[in-house]
Amino acid sequence: MDIQIYLQRYTERLQIQRYSPSSIKNYQSNASLFLTVASHKYTSAEEIEIAAIEQYIFWKIKKDNISASHQRIILASIAKFYELVLVKRINLKHLYPKRKEHKLPNFLTFAEVRKLIDVTTNLKHKSIIMLLYSGGLRLSEVVNLKITDIDSNSMTITIRQAKGKEERQVMLSESFLLIFRQYCLKYQPSYYVFEGQNNLQYSGRSIQQIVKQSAIKSGVNKRICPHILRRSFATHLLDMGTDIRHIQELLGHSHLNTTKVYTQLTDVAKNKIKSPLDRL
Image (cartoon, rainbow, N blue to C red):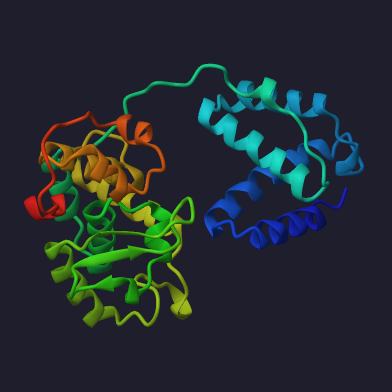
């Protein structure tokens, strides 16, 4: 089985359907592992039976103890591969978890966010952490953010490659803007807000490591990742009296129930929303 040919075709067709780079990477990674395991028994993807997918999911649950959400992502990746590459629709509903996990998401307090920022002395790293928190941005959104997306006149940040493909705007924190101007003077980014070698996009993996190292240095006894700053942003806005529907818009959630996972409804009306970073 020539797995690379299948994956190349898969990537091309995901790109044609305008999936985001992060989604393509995720779908391709899951399909690649599945095909690698299946190749031990099958000589082509067309021969793979539904029973093989069932066995693969069972193996992943036993071997890696994958979460219900991870299981859904794997199944979605495989189903999309069949649809786009093999031009075949398959029914995998019986393999999806029947019960959703209801875990309260972890988040940081105001003091913990301040500590995380204060211990980060590298100007670029501090800017990244402040941006993640100040606008509730996803990791992929920080990676894709361009300099022209930051407007200090209107004090807004435009998120153009958002999940769900819809653009949205979030507030530009005054505190972040001060640090951002210092960062630009020192690093002089040319296109993307955060750039690596040869002015290319900064990698998501590098940002994960930055947050991880700052978390260790801060001494905060919680599992801290970039996404926890997004959750903290939403939770702190609620504490500041922001209506949950405005929080939903800022986060780019399609459904209010997604926002309700870590916030509660409030009757406090929205005035002018400020970033919680400016409260630290």
